[in-house]
Amino acid sequence: LTVPASGMVAGTYSRVDASYGVHRAAAGTEAILRGALGTAKILTDTEYQTLFEAGVNCIISKPNSGVLMYGARSLGQKYVSDDRLDIYTTKSIKEGTEWAVFELNDEKLWLRLRATILSFLERLYQKGAFKGDGEGSAYYVVCDASLNTDANIERGIVTAEWGYANKKPAEFVVHRLNKITASSN
Image (tube, rainbow, N blue to C red; front, side, top):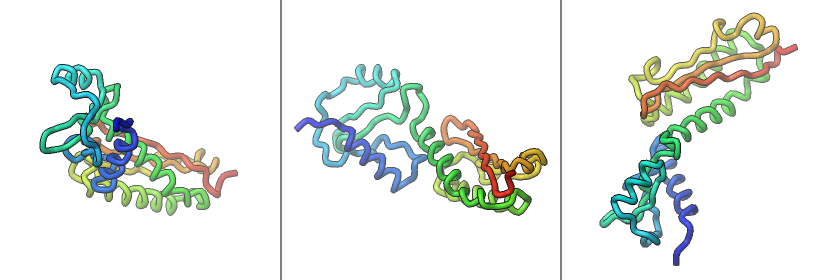
Protein backbone atom coordinates (compact mmCIF):
# COMPACT_ATOMS: atom_id res chain seq x y z
CA LEU A 1 0.00 0.00 0.00
CA THR A 2 1.47 3.37 -1.03
CA VAL A 3 0.71 6.14 1.48
CA PRO A 4 1.89 9.72 1.98
CA ALA A 5 4.95 9.85 4.20
CA SER A 6 3.81 12.81 6.32
CA GLY A 7 2.65 10.70 9.28
CA MET A 8 5.86 8.69 9.37
CA VAL A 9 7.95 11.84 8.99
CA ALA A 10 6.12 13.49 11.90
CA GLY A 11 6.62 10.37 14.01
CA THR A 12 10.32 10.28 13.13
CA TYR A 13 10.75 13.93 14.14
CA SER A 14 8.99 13.17 17.42
CA ARG A 15 11.21 10.14 18.09
CA VAL A 16 14.44 12.04 17.33
CA ASP A 17 13.25 14.99 19.48
CA ALA A 18 12.55 12.68 22.41
CA SER A 19 15.87 10.85 22.07
CA TYR A 20 18.20 13.77 21.34
CA GLY A 21 16.37 17.12 21.32
CA VAL A 22 15.10 19.52 18.67
CA HIS A 23 18.67 20.59 17.89
CA ARG A 24 19.39 17.19 16.32
CA ALA A 25 18.53 16.80 12.65
CA ALA A 26 15.95 14.13 11.91
CA ALA A 27 18.03 12.73 9.06
CA GLY A 28 20.26 9.83 8.22
CA THR A 29 20.40 6.50 10.00
CA GLU A 30 18.73 7.95 13.13
CA ALA A 31 15.72 8.92 11.01
CA ILE A 32 14.38 5.55 9.92
CA LEU A 33 10.71 5.63 8.95
CA ARG A 34 9.55 2.73 11.09
CA GLY A 35 6.99 0.55 9.38
CA ALA A 36 7.94 1.65 5.85
CA LEU A 37 8.84 -1.22 3.56
CA GLY A 38 10.11 0.81 0.62
CA THR A 39 9.60 3.95 -1.46
CA ALA A 40 7.26 4.44 -4.42
CA LYS A 41 10.19 5.70 -6.48
CA ILE A 42 13.84 4.78 -6.21
CA LEU A 43 15.97 7.84 -6.92
CA THR A 44 19.09 7.66 -9.02
CA ASP A 45 22.21 9.38 -7.66
CA THR A 46 21.70 12.18 -10.19
CA GLU A 47 18.06 12.70 -9.19
CA TYR A 48 18.97 12.69 -5.51
CA GLN A 49 21.80 15.19 -6.04
CA THR A 50 19.55 17.52 -8.06
CA LEU A 51 16.88 17.44 -5.35
CA PHE A 52 19.46 17.89 -2.57
CA GLU A 53 20.95 20.95 -4.28
CA ALA A 54 17.43 22.39 -4.60
CA GLY A 55 16.96 21.98 -0.83
CA VAL A 56 14.56 19.04 -1.01
CA ASN A 57 14.94 16.43 1.71
CA CYS A 58 14.42 13.00 0.20
CA ILE A 59 13.14 9.75 1.61
CA ILE A 60 15.32 6.93 0.41
CA SER A 61 15.68 3.22 0.89
CA LYS A 62 19.16 2.11 1.94
CA PRO A 63 20.25 -1.52 2.03
CA ASN A 64 20.76 -2.72 5.62
CA SER A 65 19.37 0.58 6.97
CA GLY A 66 15.75 0.68 5.83
CA VAL A 67 13.71 3.65 4.62
CA LEU A 68 14.99 6.90 6.02
CA MET A 69 14.88 10.66 5.73
CA TYR A 70 17.99 11.90 4.01
CA GLY A 71 18.55 15.61 4.35
CA ALA A 72 18.22 18.28 7.02
CA ARG A 73 17.82 21.56 5.15
CA SER A 74 14.88 23.70 4.17
CA LEU A 75 14.36 25.08 0.68
CA GLY A 76 16.40 28.13 1.71
CA GLN A 77 19.38 25.84 2.45
CA LYS A 78 19.09 26.57 6.16
CA TYR A 79 19.26 23.71 8.59
CA VAL A 80 15.76 22.65 9.70
CA SER A 81 17.06 21.76 13.17
CA ASP A 82 18.35 25.35 13.61
CA ASP A 83 14.89 26.73 12.83
CA ARG A 84 13.30 24.25 15.21
CA LEU A 85 15.81 25.06 17.97
CA ASP A 86 15.13 28.76 17.51
CA ILE A 87 11.37 28.26 17.77
CA TYR A 88 11.78 25.96 20.76
CA THR A 89 14.05 28.30 22.74
CA THR A 90 11.97 31.39 22.00
CA LYS A 91 8.67 29.75 22.94
CA SER A 92 10.10 28.00 26.00
CA ILE A 93 11.70 31.17 27.39
CA LYS A 94 8.59 33.22 26.72
CA GLU A 95 6.36 30.69 28.47
CA GLY A 96 8.89 29.93 31.22
CA THR A 97 9.10 33.59 32.24
CA GLU A 98 5.38 34.42 32.30
CA TRP A 99 5.63 34.76 36.07
CA ALA A 100 7.58 38.01 35.54
CA VAL A 101 4.44 39.94 34.59
CA PHE A 102 3.36 39.82 38.23
CA GLU A 103 6.64 41.20 39.60
CA LEU A 104 8.02 44.66 40.20
CA ASN A 105 10.55 45.74 37.60
CA ASP A 106 13.71 45.96 39.67
CA GLU A 107 17.12 44.32 40.10
CA LYS A 108 15.59 41.32 41.91
CA LEU A 109 13.42 40.62 38.89
CA TRP A 110 16.35 41.01 36.52
CA LEU A 111 18.39 38.54 38.56
CA ARG A 112 15.55 35.99 38.60
CA LEU A 113 14.94 36.34 34.87
CA ARG A 114 18.62 35.97 34.11
CA ALA A 115 18.90 32.87 36.34
CA THR A 116 15.79 31.27 34.80
CA ILE A 117 16.96 31.79 31.22
CA LEU A 118 20.56 30.78 32.00
CA SER A 119 19.36 27.56 33.62
CA PHE A 120 17.29 26.68 30.55
CA LEU A 121 20.14 27.46 28.13
CA GLU A 122 22.61 25.48 30.27
CA ARG A 123 20.38 22.40 30.04
CA LEU A 124 20.29 22.73 26.25
CA TYR A 125 24.07 23.21 26.17
CA GLN A 126 24.55 20.03 28.23
CA LYS A 127 22.47 18.16 25.63
CA GLY A 128 24.79 19.40 22.87
CA ALA A 129 22.52 22.05 21.36
CA PHE A 130 25.13 24.83 21.14
CA LYS A 131 28.65 25.26 19.84
CA GLY A 132 31.17 26.65 22.31
CA ASP A 133 32.68 26.04 25.71
CA GLY A 134 29.86 26.97 28.05
CA GLU A 135 28.40 30.25 29.21
CA GLY A 136 29.89 33.16 27.32
CA SER A 137 31.04 31.36 24.18
CA ALA A 138 28.05 29.02 23.71
CA TYR A 139 25.27 31.17 25.19
CA TYR A 140 24.68 34.28 27.27
CA VAL A 141 21.92 36.22 29.01
CA VAL A 142 21.75 39.94 29.76
CA CYS A 143 19.07 41.37 32.01
CA ASP A 144 20.39 44.44 33.79
CA ALA A 145 20.31 48.24 33.86
CA SER A 146 21.88 48.42 30.39
CA LEU A 147 18.65 47.03 28.91
CA ASN A 148 16.21 48.19 31.56
CA THR A 149 16.44 51.96 31.46
CA ASP A 150 14.61 54.25 33.86
CA ALA A 151 12.14 55.09 31.07
CA ASN A 152 11.31 51.42 30.50
CA ILE A 153 11.06 50.74 34.22
CA GLU A 154 8.61 53.64 34.47
CA ARG A 155 6.57 52.12 31.64
CA GLY A 156 6.72 48.70 33.34
CA ILE A 157 8.69 47.03 30.55
CA VAL A 158 11.37 44.55 31.54
CA THR A 159 13.83 43.43 28.86
CA ALA A 160 16.09 40.39 28.76
CA GLU A 161 18.43 39.44 25.92
CA TRP A 162 19.84 36.01 25.25
CA GLY A 163 21.90 34.46 22.55
CA TYR A 164 23.38 31.12 21.63
CA ALA A 165 25.84 29.74 19.10
CA ASN A 166 24.26 27.39 16.55
CA LYS A 167 26.10 24.14 15.88
CA LYS A 168 25.94 24.84 12.13
CA PRO A 169 26.78 27.18 10.52
CA ALA A 170 28.11 28.51 13.84
CA GLU A 171 26.17 31.75 13.79
CA PHE A 172 25.24 33.49 17.02
CA VAL A 173 21.46 33.86 17.36
CA VAL A 174 20.27 36.77 19.53
CA HIS A 175 16.77 37.40 20.92
CA ARG A 176 15.14 40.00 23.11
CA LEU A 177 12.20 39.46 25.40
CA ASN A 178 10.00 42.36 26.56
CA LYS A 179 7.32 41.88 29.19
CA ILE A 180 4.92 44.30 30.83
CA THR A 181 5.34 43.95 34.59
CA ALA A 182 3.17 44.65 37.63
CA SER A 183 4.93 48.00 38.02
CA SER A 184 3.49 49.36 34.76
CA ASN A 185 1.38 52.48 34.92
